[in-house]
Image (cartoon, rainbow, N blue to C red):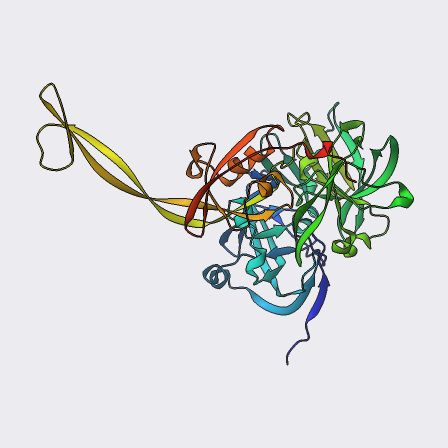
Length: 452
C-alpha cells in the first residue's frame, strides 16, 4: 500500500522545522555529562554528530523541532541504513515551491559519549539546500529540540564548546553575574518576552530564540505596535528558507534588552512579510533572537524548567558589523591554477635564460607549478551597491583581494574583509567567462543614507 504524503509546515531562519519529538538518551562515560568542541561559522554552531554510525556535521538550531538532513551523499545514506521511511512534503520560508522529503524512524544519534536512540530524521534530496558552499565547511543538516528536551545544554560561545548534562545529575548553580530568563514554548520551540527600543520607544516583544540564524535580530514590521523600520536602511538578501531565498530590509534600532543587559544600536533585519507568513502565524510572535546576539553570552538551556541562563562573555562588546560591499560569496569547488616560478642556479647550462656577472653564468630556469585552489564565486549582488557599481556580476570568480590570492583565505576570512570600516578600499582581481579584470570600490556606511 502506498502511503499518502504527509504535509508538515517548516519555518526557517537558516532552516527550521515543526514535528514531534522522540524521548530517550544516555551518556556512556560515567560522568553523566559530555563536552564537545564546535566551530562558530557565521555565528552558527557547527558540531560533529554520528547518525547510525556515519560521521556528519550539523548546525545546532534552537529554532527546529525535528532533525533534518539535506546533504547526504548516496554512500553516506547507504551506510546509515535509514529504515521505515514515510514520504512527506515540507513547506517553509522563502518564495519557492514546497520540498519533497521522507521521514525515517528509529535512528541513533551519537555525540561523543552521548547516545540518543529512537530518533526520527527528515531527509531532503535537494541540492539547493546545501549550505556547505555558503559556509565554507561541510554541513549535512540541522538538529535542535531532540537534543534540548532531555538534557541540560550549555553553549559556551567564548570557548566554543557544548556541554550536555543528564537532567538527573544537573546541579543548578547560577552565578552572581548571570541572568535567568523564563522561556515559553510553542510547538516545542523556545520563546522569550523582552523589549526593544525603536525611535525612542521601548516596545515589548516576543521572540523565537533561533541559534540557527546568523543575524542579530529579525523583527516583523507592525505599525500597530510601533515595530517599524526607520528611514535609514538598505534592501538585502537575508538568508535561505526551505523554499528559497528571503529578502528584506537591514537597519539598526536604538537598543535591545535581555534581562538586565542592554545592547545598544544592534543590527536588525525586517524580512518582507510575504516570505515569513508561516512564522507570523505563531500567536504574539514579533521576530527572532539569533546568533549574532546569542554569541555575546555563554548560555544554558534548561527546557525541563523552562529557563535560559545567560552570562555575558568576551564577545559582548563586539561591534555590530554588516557587509558593506553588497556582494555575497560561496565556495564553488576547486580549480587547477598553473603558476610560473624561476629556479636560479650558478654554472654552465645550455638551457634557460643566461646572464653573466663577472664571468659567472647565472642560469634562470622556468618551472611551472600546478596547485588546486578554491573557487569563490559571487552568488548574491545587491543593486546599486559598491560592488555592483564597480561592474561586478553574479557568477564572477574572485582570484585575489587587495593583491593577495584568495587561495590564502578561508571563505569566512575573505568575507570578513567586506565587514571592515566604511571607506576601506577593496581591490579585486576577477575571472569572468575566461577573462580576467580588476575591480575597485570602497565600503560604504549604508545606514547613513536616508531612504526617500
